[in-house]
Image (cartoon, rainbow, N blue to C red; front, side, top):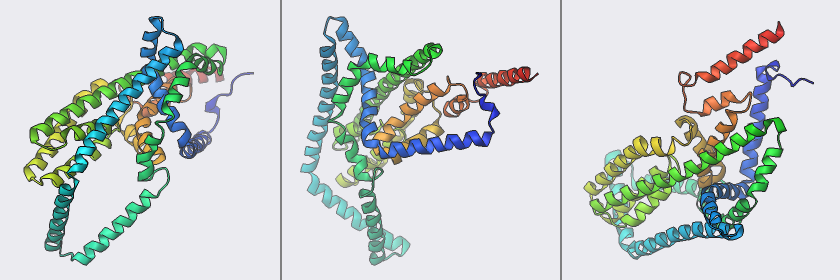
Length: 375
C-alpha cells in the first residue's frame, strides 16, 4: 500500500494539526516541568561528560567507576563554584549596613529629584511604589514562571542531577538502541546520522558556552578591578553564570553590578565606567565569542533564539531559558532530515534563501516528480 502523500491534504488541514500538536506539547512541558527540566539538564551533562568517561574506560577502569568519577568531577566543579559564591556573599553581607545606608540615601535623593522635576509629591510616589510592590508580590507567588520558582527551581534539581546523569550514562547503549528500533529498519542509517549530529551539536554548544562564560567572567572581573569596584570577584562570577542565559542574563548582570556600585560609592564616573565596560564586553562577546565559539555550533537565527528563550522562561524559568537554545538546535537537526518538515528547519536556521537554495531545489524536484506521476 503506497504511503499517503502529505501534499494531498489541504494546507489549512496540516497547519491546524501542527498548531494543535504544538499547543499540546507546550502545555505538557509546562505541567511536567518538574520532571523534564532536571532530566533535560542531565542529558546535557551526560553528553558533556561522555568523553571523560570514555577516556577513563580506555585506561582499564570499570564502566561504573568511570561514570562515577566523571559525575564526581562535575559535582566537585559545581561545589567549588558554590563555595566561591557563598564566600563572596559572606563578605558582601558584612558590608550590608553600609550598603543599606547608601541605598537609602540614594532612594531619598531620587524621590526629591522626581518631586522637583516631575512635580510628583511623596504621597503619589508611595502609591506608585505600593502598586509596584503588589505586582512584584504577585509574581513572587506565581506558578512556574514566578520569580521564586525561577530562582529556586534550578536549585531543587541539583539533588536529582547526579542520579539522572549516572543512569543516563550507564544505560546509554540501551537508550540509543531503543531510539533506533523505534523506526523502520530502512531508516536506521538516517537515525544514526541524526543522533550523531545531535550529540556533536550538544557537546560543541555546551563546551563553547562554558568557554564563553569563562571569558566574559574574566573580562568583567578585570574591568571591575581596574575601576576599583568592590566585590569584583563575586560580580565577575555572577556575570559568567548569568551569561549562560542567552540575551537576558547579561542585562540582569549589568543591572546588578550598577546597583552594587551605586550602593557602595555612588560615584558617577564609576557607574559610567561600568556601563562602558559591559558595552565593551558585550561587543567582544557578540562579535567574536558568540559567532566563532557558540553560534558556529548551532545554526539558529537570532529571532527564533530570542523567542525560544522567552518561551522557555515562561514555561520553566531560568532552566527553560538555558535549555531553549540546545532544544531548538536539536529540533532543527531533526526537521532538516524529516520529509515534510524542511520548511520548519529553514525557519529556525540562520541561512537566508540565497544561502540555502538546496531546500528550494528539493521542493522543486518533489513538484516535478508529482507532475510526472500524475501524467
